[in-house]
Length: 118
Image 1 (cartoon, rainbow, N blue to C red):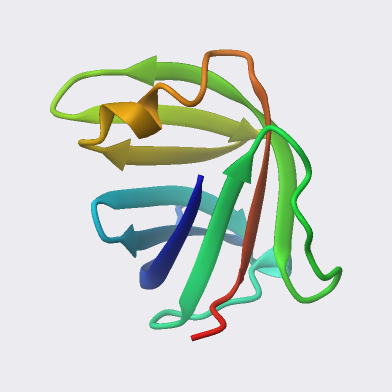
Image 2: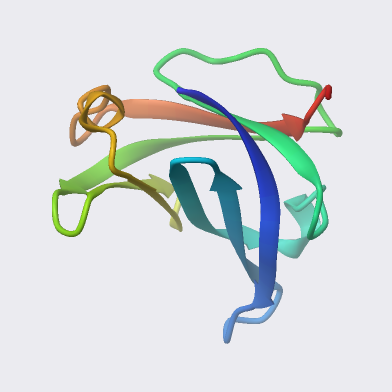
């Protein structure tokens, strides 16, 4: 899954040093937790998000890259894929069943967020 997104919302979590990001990617919305020390982007930035079963290319120190697991999938009010990146939650929300069917619970996945080239 490779998406062009805008980091549309950044909120502080009740947990110190944790931010809640909302990424709008057209028909897909991603909400995720991220620690301030590894959050290289700001609200309004255009980014490219890649979630895959193999390690995508990324630039160390510039892009956000993490490994985790699909913990569950839900089909209520659209489709949701919940991913744990070592305890940080990522929720991918879509109406596209094909995108939903790309992943299964306990799949090991990699997530890379990089600055958009356009």
